[in-house]
Length: 90
Image (tube, rainbow, N blue to C red):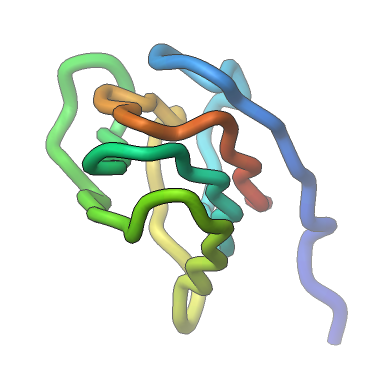
């Protein structure tokens, strides 16, 4: 049985990823100095589905278990001390 293809999108700021309905499967984050934080909501103004703090000046990989996090749109509401992130979704 085959599943849906996984796509990736690199983001460098807050706002919509513009991918429509999706399941977030993994996130790669590159942080800078300070207090890195990433918050993702279910679309603009939706409920928080992921809120993470990271160690500074490092790269991080966040694997989402099972079928991933289902959202109407991937919306980055907080992106602090993060150079860039790549979201893997289907």
